[in-house]
Amino acid sequence: MCKAFIFDLDGVITDTAELHFQAWLRMANEEGYYFDRKINEQLRGVSRRTSLSIILAGTKLSEIQTTVLMARKNKYYLEQLESLSEKDILPGIRSLLLELNARGIKVAVASASKNARYVLYQLGLIPLFDAICDGWSVVRSKPEPDIFIYAAGQLRVNTCDCIVMEDAEAGIHAARAAGMQVVGIGPSARVGQADWHFNDTATFDLTTVLENAEP
Ligand code: B16
Ligand code: MG
Image (cartoon, rainbow, N blue to C red):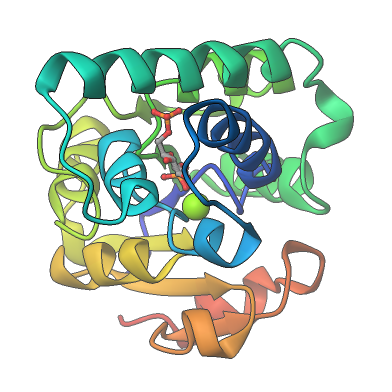
C-alpha cells in the first residue's frame, strides 16, 4: 500500500542537469579535460566525486587535487543556482505535491546532491516535504539503496510502502534494491527498468500509479 512518495530532485522536481553541465564544462575546459553532453548523460544521478572520475576518464589525481576540482565545480554550480526560482519547477510537480499532502501520503526528497536543500529553498518547496534526504545523509550514493532506505526511516514507513520517482538509471537501481516500486521519468532507453514509465513530469498520472501499486 502506498504510504509515501520519494522524489529524486535533479530531473524530477527541477532540471538542474543543465546547470551541473555548465559548471563541469567550465572546470573541464580550464583543466584541459574533454567533456561534452554525451558524457554528461553518465553523470545523471551519480555523486559529485563519481562525476569527476567519469570526466577524468582514468587520469589519477591526488585527494587534494580531487577536492580542489570538486570545490571549484561546486562554486560554479552555486553561482548558477542563485537565479533558480519557482519558475524552474518541472510541470505538474507542485500540484502533485499538494495532492499527495492532501491525501495524507508522506513525501520526501532523496537526492545525491549536497545542494538539494538550497535547490528546494530556491524553488520555494521546502514546506511541502516531510523529509529532505541529500548527499549529506548517507555515505554510499545511488545506485546503492541507502538514500531511499534512509528516507523511508525518516518518514517512518516500511520500504515496501514507498513509491519512488526517478529520472536516472542509477536511481532506479537504488530504489529497486531498497524494495520500492519506481516511476521512471524520461526516455524508455534510460528508465525502462521502472515499474511505470512517463516521458516527462507533465504526463505523469497519479491515479494510474496508485491503482496499480502493490497492495
Ligand atoms: P552535488 P539527483 C544529482 O542529483 C545529479 O543528478 C548529479 O548530476 C549530481 O552529480 C549529484 O546530484 C550530486 O550533486 O554536486 O550538488 O552534490 O538526481 O540525485 O537529485
Ligand atoms: Mg535525478
